Length: 203
Image (cartoon, rainbow, N blue to C red):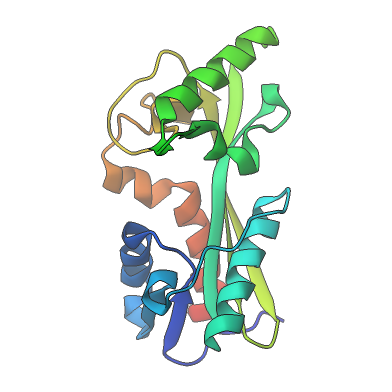
């Protein structure tokens, strides 16, 4: 039996202000007040798991333990079939440079590794988002959203972020990098995960 969220306060286990605002807007109809790790002075825990759900659980449970209120965390990335699911949980790591992240570097590496393996097109891929809602007593609920598509080259579009310019979702001619961000947000892997979360725990 899925546990329903009760109460008014929720920690969103992130330091990303944009993500906090997006989640706050989604949960506003349910009278939920959200705060972030930054609001509580909480560090980001090390993400040591090999799966999205594992890393989301680390972040959610750490936040719930530290604050004593339920905590919501997500872990997301892109998986490429021809790379055996890479970069996966290392999606952001592929973009790491001194002093920040360079996603052009990450996208170029994706293309180069596909070439190195002589993977034929279409280069099937998925954007994945896993949400974990954890309670201070250790219980959690997990929800996955998946957007299937393919990697394209060259990069197309300057909207969105991350790997969006090389990801073309199934049923669409544009990449996420070419789409209006509101259109993308309505159909994205994160939107699909949130639909499940809200239906099961908030509705």
